[in-house]
Image (cartoon, rainbow, N blue to C red):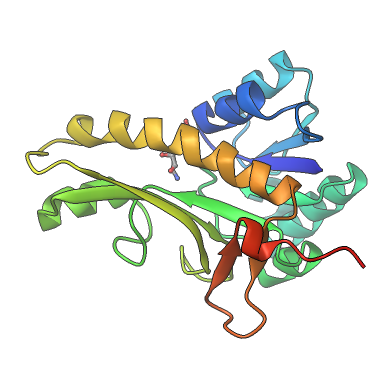
Amino acid sequence: MKVAVLASGTGTNLQALLDQVHRREGIEIVAVASDKPEAQALERAAAAGVPTAVFERAAFAGDRLARDRAMADWLRERGTQLVVMAGYMQIVSEEFLDRFPDAVINLHPSLLPAFPGADAIGQAIAYGVKVFGVTVHFADAGVDSGPVIMQRSIELPDARELDDVRPQLNSIEYQILPEVVRLFARGAVRISPTHPRRVLVGPSAVLPES
Ligand code: GRF
């Protein structure tokens, strides 16, 4: 399965994928794209010999659709079958999603539907929650609103600062994102045919061979 990763920042989740699933179990990361030329994720990809490209909105005269079109073209040229948004700080257009049907996923550092959008951890601390967590979900045209694939939680009743939470959630991310990508490679992730919000994961998702 050919996987592309979109990342805007440090790319530690990309690194987890490079370390844990790249060139294993039939999975290959074939492309890393960013909206930020300075993203450290690009250096991580280059160090692993994975092709990179930058699609800055400014380079498309601020036209988000044109940017997404160019990015989708490049990812398709590379043979991408699954797009993973890992710290990608842009919303992708509906047109982009249509180019990769049921094959664009996003990682978000909260237990959705709580705390979508930017600064999810800060929002959760400000709310005073005792249980934090991470969600991997299908991307849709909304903000962190697509069907949930996998979630994992951790109790942190005394959390007050970002640093009390972020490292703990990062460790969870580095486990569940590679886990979800492996499940996709096995054909073990599928939106329920009877319930569009429900995602079948694991053996129940695998279709019998015809
Ligand atoms: C992760 O915490 C992810 O959940 C959030 O942005 C962060 C990306 O970190 N959306 P990195 O670039 O993978 O290091």
